[in-house]
Length: 262
Length: 216
Image (cartoon, rainbow over all chains, first blue to last red):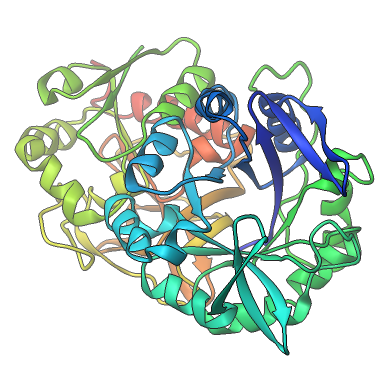
């Protein structure tokens, strides 16, 4: 039976993982490769790197970070943030990413998804959708949740899959960072609308939220970020709680003595 | 032990090369795009990501040589689309596979596709994998239990004795591991299956080089 995935997400700015703190900018939380490998050892099923570079220099550094990480990481690595063309995707995959995630670019040019799916296979094309509730429906937002579009999130998810996306990374803009749980209604609406795996994102505050996203939200995977970086919980503890709640998971690996595999 | 990744233009070889180097430190790993050079090795590794059609087209110029070498007992580990290329043909696209394992590749029958994530390997019993090699995994070693999959098509072997392990997604059951001659094909990605995946790669290299006719 296919297990449900727990995915650790890292916002990468230049050489560092950073975390947004409301109104006071970004805080440094660690080194990307180190953190990714640590989360793998604790049992993370996949890692996501989001490039939040603010400058050209930082953007150039990002692919080096991906390269260095891919050399040491032996779970799938998804790379997103700022990818706008097939060439951008090619560079990310060559650097060692297993999947590429597109957010804003396909809203302007949906063909991008089909071009990438034809070239690399649907299994490595992730459509990242930021959605917020507006007037009783979920609207798609771009540019990091700042820019409202006219698109309905559930419809847009269907369209992304028709265009070739093999997975949907669904983030609730309303819940992101609030730590009071995923938007279960949104997650369920999208999970029921599309035939590809859906990753719930935005709002994880504790293990019960993760379990709810996979159960009531019907997601295939749950993405967590801040609660791991801040040490509120660990991948291993989340996995244990998922298992205790009856969610099929890959158990956190037993620590290997003198392991040099990573 | 010379281990060669055959770069026929369909796959991201980086992490696989790195995983092989870590899995088997005694391996002398190389990446070769020339079929002749790629087959002049102790073990050839056949990677593959993407769709069957384009991959079969890229493999076509080397198809006969690769087929002959593998049928003749050259040890081989084929991964994901590489495993599918061991079969005759695929419903996914035009072109010929290597025809080493009789059967075809068909679409996965499930509501949620691609089959993406960690799933269970159900190991077949004694006699699986044919008579071409010793039982594998070796007695005493814990067989790989969970591995990372990312695919929409699956293999449908003509002869189920080639199947070493099966996996289920929803109501569909398909081979996750096959063995013919001294070739092992894995539908999953050992290089993405964390430490157990690397251990699997080490055992697979040992298994393909220990079979009859493999000791050259």
